[in-house]
Figure (cartoon, rainbow, N blue to C red):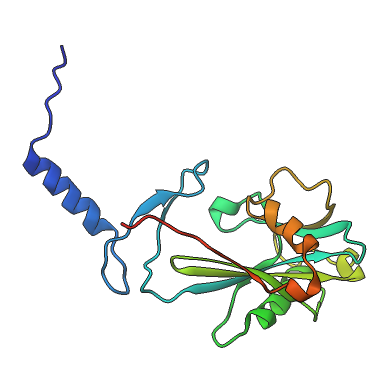
Length: 194
Protein backbone atom coordinates (compact mmCIF):
# COMPACT_ATOMS: atom_id res chain seq x y z
CA UNK A 1 0.00 0.00 0.00
CA UNK A 2 1.42 3.34 -1.05
CA UNK A 3 1.70 6.19 1.42
CA UNK A 4 2.21 8.78 -1.33
CA UNK A 5 -0.59 11.29 -1.57
CA UNK A 6 -1.76 12.66 -4.89
CA UNK A 7 -1.33 16.42 -5.34
CA UNK A 8 -4.56 18.35 -5.16
CA UNK A 9 -5.96 20.20 -8.20
CA UNK A 10 -4.82 23.55 -6.75
CA UNK A 11 -1.19 22.34 -6.52
CA UNK A 12 -1.27 20.97 -10.08
CA UNK A 13 -2.74 24.23 -11.44
CA UNK A 14 -0.08 26.24 -9.61
CA UNK A 15 2.72 24.03 -10.94
CA UNK A 16 1.40 24.26 -14.52
CA UNK A 17 1.16 28.06 -14.24
CA UNK A 18 4.77 28.24 -13.02
CA UNK A 19 6.00 26.02 -15.86
CA UNK A 20 4.14 27.90 -18.57
CA UNK A 21 5.41 31.27 -17.29
CA UNK A 22 9.04 30.11 -17.24
CA UNK A 23 9.33 29.87 -21.00
CA UNK A 24 7.81 32.81 -22.81
CA UNK A 25 8.99 34.46 -26.00
CA UNK A 26 10.92 37.66 -25.33
CA UNK A 27 9.54 39.00 -28.63
CA UNK A 28 5.76 38.50 -28.22
CA UNK A 29 5.17 36.73 -24.89
CA UNK A 30 3.60 33.47 -26.12
CA UNK A 31 4.33 30.30 -24.14
CA UNK A 32 7.16 28.24 -25.62
CA UNK A 33 7.61 24.50 -25.51
CA UNK A 34 10.94 23.06 -24.36
CA UNK A 35 12.58 19.82 -25.39
CA UNK A 36 15.84 18.00 -25.02
CA UNK A 37 17.79 18.25 -28.30
CA UNK A 38 19.42 16.16 -29.37
CA UNK A 39 17.89 13.50 -27.09
CA UNK A 40 21.27 11.94 -26.22
CA UNK A 41 22.71 15.31 -25.18
CA UNK A 42 20.46 16.10 -22.23
CA UNK A 43 20.77 19.84 -22.83
CA UNK A 44 17.45 21.72 -22.82
CA UNK A 45 16.63 24.08 -25.65
CA UNK A 46 13.56 26.28 -26.01
CA UNK A 47 11.67 26.04 -29.25
CA UNK A 48 11.77 29.44 -30.88
CA UNK A 49 8.72 31.57 -31.35
CA UNK A 50 7.26 31.51 -34.86
CA UNK A 51 6.67 35.28 -34.53
CA UNK A 52 10.27 36.18 -33.72
CA UNK A 53 12.88 37.00 -36.37
CA UNK A 54 14.79 33.99 -37.68
CA UNK A 55 18.51 33.59 -37.13
CA UNK A 56 20.19 32.66 -40.41
CA UNK A 57 23.16 30.29 -40.63
CA UNK A 58 25.27 28.83 -43.43
CA UNK A 59 27.08 25.48 -43.69
CA UNK A 60 29.33 24.48 -46.58
CA UNK A 61 30.74 21.20 -47.79
CA UNK A 62 33.88 21.52 -49.93
CA UNK A 63 34.67 18.51 -52.13
CA UNK A 64 37.65 17.75 -54.35
CA UNK A 65 36.88 17.88 -58.11
CA UNK A 66 36.70 14.07 -58.26
CA UNK A 67 34.09 14.03 -55.45
CA UNK A 68 36.16 11.58 -53.42
CA UNK A 69 36.99 13.84 -50.44
CA UNK A 70 35.04 16.30 -48.29
CA UNK A 71 36.38 18.90 -45.86
CA UNK A 72 34.83 18.88 -42.38
CA UNK A 73 35.30 20.82 -39.16
CA UNK A 74 35.13 19.31 -35.66
CA UNK A 75 32.79 21.59 -33.70
CA UNK A 76 33.49 22.88 -30.20
CA UNK A 77 30.50 25.21 -30.02
CA UNK A 78 27.62 25.17 -29.30
CA UNK A 79 27.89 22.62 -26.50
CA UNK A 80 25.44 20.13 -28.05
CA UNK A 81 27.64 19.95 -31.20
CA UNK A 82 30.95 19.64 -29.35
CA UNK A 83 33.09 16.86 -30.82
CA UNK A 84 30.83 16.40 -33.86
CA UNK A 85 32.02 16.84 -37.46
CA UNK A 86 30.14 19.17 -39.82
CA UNK A 87 30.86 21.52 -42.68
CA UNK A 88 32.35 24.92 -41.79
CA UNK A 89 29.88 27.78 -41.40
CA UNK A 90 28.24 30.20 -39.01
CA UNK A 91 25.77 33.06 -38.62
CA UNK A 92 25.01 35.66 -41.25
CA UNK A 93 25.95 39.22 -40.33
CA UNK A 94 23.31 41.99 -40.70
CA UNK A 95 22.72 42.79 -44.38
CA UNK A 96 24.93 39.91 -45.57
CA UNK A 97 23.74 37.45 -48.22
CA UNK A 98 23.96 33.74 -47.50
CA UNK A 99 26.54 33.25 -50.28
CA UNK A 100 28.73 36.08 -48.94
CA UNK A 101 28.47 34.65 -45.40
CA UNK A 102 29.50 31.21 -46.66
CA UNK A 103 32.57 32.62 -48.39
CA UNK A 104 33.53 34.72 -45.32
CA UNK A 105 32.98 31.92 -42.79
CA UNK A 106 35.00 29.44 -44.85
CA UNK A 107 37.96 31.83 -45.10
CA UNK A 108 37.77 32.60 -41.36
CA UNK A 109 37.73 28.90 -40.41
CA UNK A 110 40.07 27.36 -43.03
CA UNK A 111 42.20 30.16 -44.49
CA UNK A 112 41.07 29.28 -48.03
CA UNK A 113 38.92 31.56 -50.20
CA UNK A 114 36.38 29.63 -52.29
CA UNK A 115 34.45 32.13 -54.43
CA UNK A 116 32.04 29.74 -56.16
CA UNK A 117 29.76 28.35 -53.44
CA UNK A 118 26.48 26.92 -54.74
CA UNK A 119 23.42 26.71 -52.48
CA UNK A 120 21.72 23.33 -52.76
CA UNK A 121 19.46 23.07 -49.71
CA UNK A 122 17.85 25.05 -46.90
CA UNK A 123 16.53 23.85 -43.56
CA UNK A 124 14.21 26.03 -41.52
CA UNK A 125 12.37 25.72 -38.25
CA UNK A 126 11.02 27.89 -35.47
CA UNK A 127 13.52 30.74 -35.10
CA UNK A 128 16.22 29.56 -37.51
CA UNK A 129 17.18 28.93 -41.13
CA UNK A 130 20.28 27.13 -42.37
CA UNK A 131 21.46 27.52 -45.97
CA UNK A 132 23.61 24.63 -47.21
CA UNK A 133 26.28 25.15 -49.87
CA UNK A 134 28.62 22.97 -51.87
CA UNK A 135 31.79 23.70 -53.84
CA UNK A 136 34.42 21.65 -55.68
CA UNK A 137 38.09 22.65 -55.62
CA UNK A 138 41.61 21.28 -55.35
CA UNK A 139 42.08 23.91 -52.62
CA UNK A 140 40.46 21.39 -50.27
CA UNK A 141 43.96 20.07 -49.52
CA UNK A 142 45.34 23.55 -48.64
CA UNK A 143 42.76 24.21 -45.90
CA UNK A 144 43.95 24.34 -42.30
CA UNK A 145 42.41 25.28 -38.99
CA UNK A 146 42.29 29.02 -38.34
CA UNK A 147 40.39 28.65 -35.04
CA UNK A 148 40.35 26.26 -32.09
CA UNK A 149 38.22 23.82 -34.14
CA UNK A 150 39.95 21.04 -36.12
CA UNK A 151 39.72 21.07 -39.95
CA UNK A 152 40.33 17.80 -41.81
CA UNK A 153 39.51 16.04 -45.08
CA UNK A 154 37.78 12.67 -45.21
CA UNK A 155 37.08 10.18 -47.95
CA UNK A 156 33.40 10.49 -48.80
CA UNK A 157 33.06 6.70 -48.40
CA UNK A 158 34.72 6.77 -44.95
CA UNK A 159 33.18 9.66 -43.00
CA UNK A 160 33.88 9.97 -39.27
CA UNK A 161 31.54 8.24 -36.83
CA UNK A 162 30.88 11.46 -34.91
CA UNK A 163 29.27 13.13 -37.93
CA UNK A 164 26.44 15.57 -37.17
CA UNK A 165 23.19 13.72 -37.92
CA UNK A 166 21.93 15.93 -40.76
CA UNK A 167 25.33 15.78 -42.50
CA UNK A 168 24.78 12.05 -43.05
CA UNK A 169 22.16 12.89 -45.69
CA UNK A 170 23.28 16.41 -46.70
CA UNK A 171 26.68 15.23 -47.97
CA UNK A 172 25.25 12.53 -50.27
CA UNK A 173 22.56 15.00 -51.41
CA UNK A 174 25.24 17.52 -52.40
CA UNK A 175 27.06 14.90 -54.44
CA UNK A 176 24.00 13.42 -56.12
CA UNK A 177 22.48 16.64 -57.47
CA UNK A 178 22.85 17.93 -61.00
CA UNK A 179 24.12 21.50 -61.16
CA UNK A 180 20.85 22.81 -62.63
CA UNK A 181 18.91 21.45 -59.64
CA UNK A 182 21.28 22.58 -56.92
CA UNK A 183 19.02 25.22 -55.33
CA UNK A 184 15.86 23.15 -55.44
CA UNK A 185 15.52 21.63 -51.97
CA UNK A 186 14.01 23.18 -48.85
CA UNK A 187 13.40 21.12 -45.72
CA UNK A 188 10.97 22.55 -43.16
CA UNK A 189 11.11 21.40 -39.53
CA UNK A 190 7.63 20.85 -38.16
CA UNK A 191 7.17 20.99 -34.37
CA UNK A 192 4.01 20.30 -32.39
CA UNK A 193 2.11 23.34 -31.13
CA UNK A 194 2.82 24.43 -27.56
